[in-house]
Length: 118
Image 1 (cartoon, helix red, strand yellow):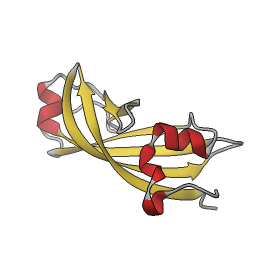
Image 2 (cartoon, helix red, strand yellow; image 1 turned 180 degrees about the vertical axis):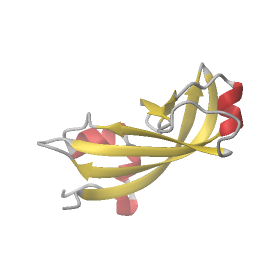
Image 3 (cartoon, rainbow, N blue to C red; image 1 turned 45 degrees about the horizontal axis):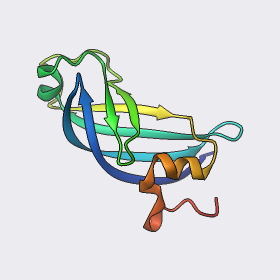
Image 4 (cartoon, helix red, strand yellow; image 1 turned 90 degrees about the horizontal axis):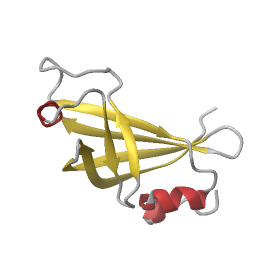
């Protein structure tokens, strides 16, 4: 059974060792276990930008709401042989209500992405 609820896109910043760069990201909400929700976060970052700033395997996404979300490269450490665009992901299961989701991810409070009535 697919527990998919909604998807949205946002713009924020990636923080790596105190250095910031604008980044677009996508969000998917699924019903989790019990009362929780699972928000999957995905963004693409420049391999060279990451390597030049000492990327090991994780960084921080600063979302539109200002929330700091740890993101990581699922393939582990990067090297110059990796793709120019690197996928970074996170899974957030800290939200237990749609109000929590909208507070942390305001991208879900507009247009067709609204979570009202769920």
